[in-house]
Length: 354
Image (cartoon, rainbow, N blue to C red; front, top):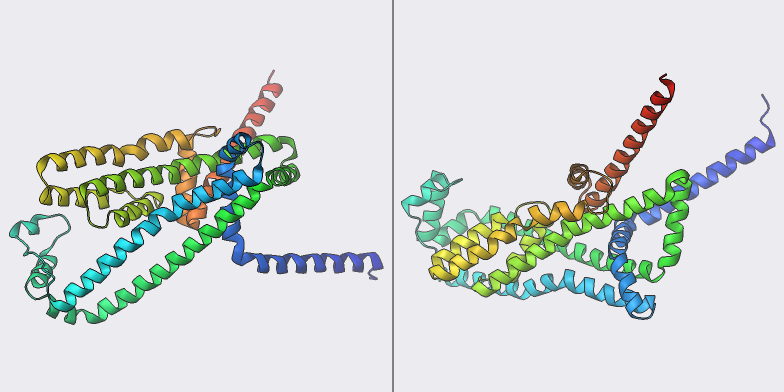
């Protein structure tokens, strides 16, 4: 069978296009996460950007610059505030260990009755209280390995902070050129779902904003309120504990695992009245996500709260932080497609029935 020249030309064109697509994907791959985070931040901040730009006389560039700086302060501020305290704490701990002045209180017999405390942990505590130097010498290999892991984690966290900064800057560029970006998004949606373009564009925007405010926004609010309480009570390393609370809240892990031990510490080291006030302050802080998260995540989204929540948490488990958003978006769109499909079947059945 003879292959025509037109067929050969088509094969060559397809091969060249495939090669260009593969190369482009390879070149863009290292920056996909940063670009996607930039898009998510831009979509989430778009209503605030429009309001600010209107107040500034439709000066998009200035509004985007102000928003970028504000977001960077919100994100980088707690991290920068916790670094000096963390550095001082580590230095003081190292100095006390080297000088032998680090004093660990004896473990009372009642400690054995604490949850998750067995005989081995009790004996380990007792040895740390009586001869800390010997204990550190015995577990030196494990401590060295833990130190290496901690340094690796710190390096990874530093890289993540740099990526977030880059994403915020990209979001600022997108907001500055928001007209062209919106036109491109609409054209892309037109190619994918031409019959329901506006609906699914709006649905995607609202889902991203709902997850942003419901997960990250609530986490930031909880961490700030918890940090204020820590600072007022004079808790050592208050900024660091607030940062840990922020990370736990974003990871959908209860901040109670940090706040409850700190409350116990407050009752053991402060007077009763301030400790009771500290407890009263943190009780609504811990419950804040149960109240605000359902309201914010479901606002403006045509899907049940359970669908959004399963998509966000399932996406996070499968794909990390980006999965929080894309899991929710994909599941909400899938839910709406399923609803539309079942309605069409019901309509067809109604027309067929006599």
